[in-house]
Image (tube, rainbow over the protein chains, first blue to last red):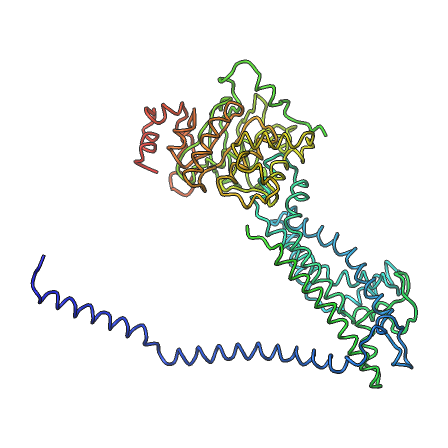
Length: 311
Length: 279
């Protein structure tokens, strides 16, 4: 239907005008916004850089200064106060391994058990369960030296009275990281959707069967990640151990019932000696510990990514 | 382990005389409240053996709540109270000696959203028999259940694959198979097709009609055509408000043969609902 040139010409002009208006309003961002945006992004980048620079400085320092002492002897030699050239970390490494084994033995059943109770059984409308919950969060933030005092007062002496032995160190570290494990395990358990529990219960499974055969298997990766991270923390703690019997100059392989040593304590001790050689030794110890921690954290991340599930 | 239980075994009923008119559930003035707020009130109806019984009605009318009374899934909600009399094969389902775990073994449930376990297809079906300790000839039980759920042909070559790899419709049939594997007497289905496409829905509907030879089925559905297609008896529930409209609860308006509900209902409200005038 032809209605002449005029209307269509008018329509064309109107369309062009509209397009120009749209284009103008799309490109016309206020200058102030642009500046603020850039400045803010810059600040955030700076924050990241500061964090990374600090970390890098420590790493580089440790590697440069510790490298000369890095050798297999480090793992096999006993410590010494006199001859840094033949001093090593053998009892400290063994002590740390035994401490961690003890922590795992204690923290896995108790931590997972607590998490199961709090998530699956505790009635959240009762005030005492809420009190427990808040306090576990708080305990995770208590400084480690406090746990050291607790360990000294209640485990080494006091009610348990086990003396200054490796098991006391294990229990103290276990108490220290227990809240972290409970919190991680609870989150993993909570991530299992209720539809899984209901599906299981609807088949005539009991509550415990449902937890044992559905909820726990589905939350194992999350729990394992939490446990590994907690153990990494326990491995790096020196302060509480100093209070519960970690000694520096033991020249034997410690058993769980003896006085013991641990990597961070040994590093601390070497680092406080004035001789340059001992400080080199301390840095070598730092490298070893960093290597172990890095390996453990990488494993935790791998575990999480490998088994991460979207429901 | 023998639990104090309702004294019934499904086998008894499968071969019992009396056939279709036998009652599976008898509800007398059953109501549910959540911490004092009524969800459904005064429901009285009988569910007959080997029928598909449909519960229809608008959202919030308490269909699902009512369904969950029937296998004591409401027990899992601390605030829920069930009152009135609810008989299952003549026994009080809420009697003091009744173990809800045993109830759920006899009265299976299929949920709105397919909820396969994060395990292999085989382990999903085997889960029920395993927790009940019935592991003799497990392979045969699994195959039979998958065949009954019309899923065997599609999955027989990949029983060890994770169930999450199945399509939604297949997952829902797997959930039905999982339920069949514990040999229940009755299967409750809570809007089993609401998350599925029309083709999967059709398969599940065909399956329901097949399964009713062996089981009694109670289904909650939003879809009136579905109720009309698969069910023998239909209950229509509606939302009722109190005078100042503060509280709302579901009430049974009409319960009859499906054909009658959809062609010649006795109650005007039922007619308005099934003809699409309200709801």
